Length: 123
Image (cartoon, rainbow, N blue to C red):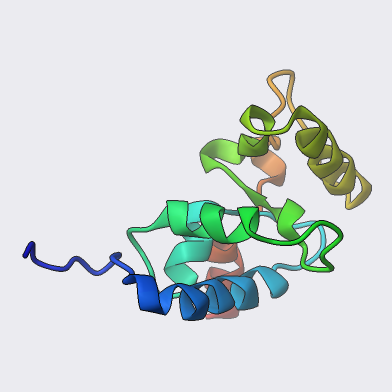
C-alpha cells in the first residue's frame, strides 16, 4: 500500500469531498473567479485540483451553483476541451458579471480576482 498524500481522497469520501467543493464554489462572489486548485485547497484538498473539476463535471444541467466562476490556471476556460458550447456559456456568464478576456480567451490578468486575493484583504 502506498503512503497517503494530503490530496488523496478515498472512494467512500467522494460525496463528502464534492459537498465541500460545492460549498467553496457557492461562496465565490459575483465578478470573481477562482482556479480549480484554489477551490480544492479551500475545500481541504490542496493537491487535488482535478477533484474540483470532477465535482463540477458531476453537476446536473441547470444547477444554480455558480460553476462558471471556476477557471483553469492563468484564467483559462478549461471547459473548452470538453464542450465548446459549455465554454461559450461560461464566458458569456463571466462577461455578464463584468470580467474581461484577452485575445487568447483567458480572463484578463488584471481582472483575475481570486479567493486568495479576497483572503488577503480580509486579514
